Amino acid sequence: MSISRRGAGPWPAVWLAILVTCQAHGAPRVVDAHMHYNGDPAFLDKLLARLEAVDGLAFLLTTPQDLPAVKTFIGKHPDRLMGFGSIKLDDPHALEQIDQFKTAGFRGLGEITGPLKNYDDPAYSPIYARAEKNGMIILFHTGIVNRTRPEIPADISVDRMRVTTLDNIARRYPRLNIIGAHLGNPDYAWAAEIGRWHPNLFFDASGSTLIKKREDYTFFKSIFWWSGVVSPHTPKSDVSAFEKLVFGSDVFAGELEELDASLERYRKMLDACGVSPKSQANIMGGTLWRILNP
Image 1: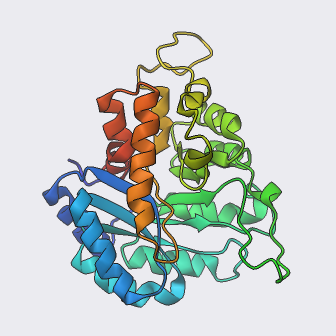
Image 2 (image 1 turned 45 degrees about the vertical axis):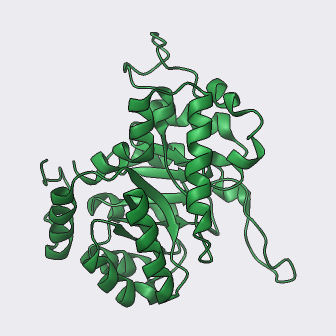
Image 3 (image 1 turned 90 degrees about the vertical axis):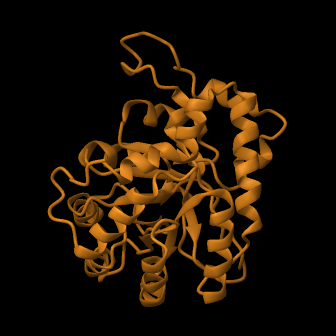
């Protein structure tokens, strides 16, 4: 595999070392694009054991304050963990934090959530431009947001995080790889249709979607409808439409059981929809592995 990046500048030494180590170990069976670090060091050891069991690599979503401890742990296990920096789009120090995460060898940003403006607002352009320049992936929350503390006022709006806002970002930053978490729940059709035309846009199906649709998994065939359709209105590719999906568990608060549950839900849905073993392998890890190793 080549370890060059087009248009992203030189590799930091830490980043290059991590990439070389991952390539030496070969592609994992599972790449989890959506794994939250809960701030508990004991969680890291438990996560490592689970990843070893499933031959997995996880994008570990880490806040700036947790960066020092997590960076050290990732450095010891680069074949199982990849750092993602959890920044806030409205934080005045966001660009500085991006550079700190890049220097630490982190490969992406996210989960981006809770913006005070729409995701595609021009005010956030410097952040997306910096991520694209650094060759980083961005994981955006899309769709409905939980409310675990309803007694506390919060300036959060799902409308600012609609999946449709990713369309403009994907067009403006064609070298920026984007993952929309939760498949836009419940705007699944919009998510798939936007993804259909953007080679740099993918989605995970984490969260409640594969729970509420468990009695009708074939529903997703109507969303990812263009497999094998030759037309001026479809991408010129023989790749399954389902390959706009990547795996994500959305483990948070240390609840690692959700990793196994998510793996089972994904596989049941893909089997129910008749997705080929080759495409399933790409969805569960191959696609993201190739993005990490251009």
